[in-house]
Image (cartoon, rainbow, N blue to C red; front, side, top):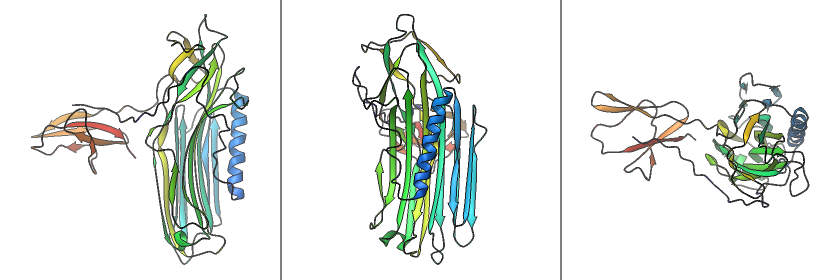
Length: 372
């Protein structure tokens, strides 16, 4: 029995002096500010960043902004530890519904927004949902020989989730409507004495994607980074013996604008990154010359060891039930099978735990992959 995790790791080789981080602000990839709402989200995010830098300790903030018709909901939790998910739904009978989910843990972000308009006779006008999940922490590497000198490490995120949107009636064909669903996941790192290429004190790894049907357009397309895989590896610079301030966040924004002509139509959209963005672990710790460092001491404010990935490792168990083999597992994973350990593997449609292997089936190998 072979159990593996699909990784599809995207790795870029980074040499000392050529750190591969985005030197722009983490919010340069924010949704196009075509409304005051988008601008308000931008300000909120910037305020959160300033707060995280001031605290320089472990801290979380997560919550929702939901607007449907005349109904508005906003709730954010913040503190040293999360206190449970923020989950909310608003339904306006005969008009539509909006729902959101946000949660956080050190090394894990969750965000989900669902928006639907079901009555073409009373179409959506301008409605939106925003879910945000963010944590701040500080950690450091220390070594008596290296303290005070520069070093490098690589990091990435595994972004798991899915997005779907169905625009019916004139919502898709009208030049006067816009649907925009956006996600971004960001790693920000700041260290006293280290600057990014643009002179900023913040080094950022930025991953983003967008489902967009713009004004004057009649198609809905996805642009951006892939989901359900490790994102591009980013190199960060730091100084041994000094705190490394990090914040990592995931945000989902869904908005529909039909204010110009109020054309009839329906909408059903779900942007679900509630399956989590996971910290991928610190890789290739090295000194200023690029030499591997293996014996540096590590500590963090929260106690979390960011040297390890936070991705849940699944366990696939087999037992015999009568003349059949039963496979069981827990968590949001999908079952795949292949004729050889090397593959290729194929997803088993609608397979869920417990799964009974059909009797008489030829010798097969099974593995679990993160669900979509």
